[in-house]
Length: 549
Image: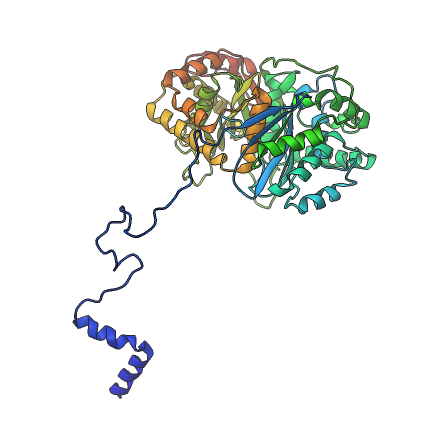
């Protein structure tokens, strides 16, 4: 019986098993690998004899990363960055937005964002635009950007896929398309028609009113208060002027904005000298040719009259406080209860992105870092930033402590957002004012190097995305008529010293604070007390004494 089992086992193993058994006790077998045998003693670092020498691709002279810029006869700037790949990102950036609405009904830029890529003179509906884009691998994605904490000020538009994105911020409106590079002529023609020849029909205006109204209701209902707090801190910091004007359309203006109001605004701000046609992944000469074909000598839908009422106001920082008392106990969207929180944002004026101190402020913002109290940690989460080490790790009742830096062409705002139980609002405010005071104190070399490395890493990782490169090119050319390359920005970041951080922080602390508060504000300190704490040496709030609790 044993002999039968042994024979069956050998049969299942196959004929190779017999040779393997013999080799086990004989001379060692010589296995033939693809790189062995013929060249047994040549190290991997040396070329193999008889193999042709490889030829690698090289660049002649300067690396081909420079941005090419051409200005047309009508003042429109054309900027491009070549990038290998099948798809390109093309768009028109316009120097317009909510900051220019002082003489108009507030909310026009919000309306134009929602009306983007609707019917035009050439396209009868949004569906026709989508069908045209589908022929070149394009899809539609309408969204509002959020500013990221990186020195170029770029906004992450969308995932790296063919997309079409109208985006509006406080000072820039952007229409962008990602599609196959072979469709460049069609895409530029479509963009020109969307920007210069919108039909703005009554039906589209009514649909836009509904969309704006829904967004306003969602803004007030969502558990995440950050968009609303950002609106409030800008309103407090720049009361009644430029970037302090409402970015979202006020409810009372939704029914008042019509075609005549929109055309009046477009006539003044949608002019060629305020536009940039930017692209990534195309040849510059082809882009200029398309720009001349579709954007030169074109009469827009609102007429060709000269702009006569352009607002060139410079942002005036005022400081102040904006409070919104609200019951935050029922904001949970699901069955699990969400803790009732009070949200505070305190900000101070920094500088514009055109100034030399912009890079030190960006490093300072990264050094402060922070985030939510619930985080899994890991690389890039900022677990070694000051707001984690000094605030969230020491005070378990703090739900959030995050630093933000908003920067524009004539001003900037560095602020800290914090959230906690309403009964601990006063203590939370004092913790944040102490962190502001510590910004002008001793800067550890290790934390500074970590912040600079993280900032450079975030910059380079974001610029891996083609749409982000596009927006970086467009925004820089729109603001400065040139573009700083990533390696130049990295060199500026490396040169930041501890004394630079202390200097910019000390200058910032001389300004009046801006405060935004949302939720149960029963124990919120007065604005004068917050201002006094930021003017003190230790950041402590003045003591208050109550006869009755």
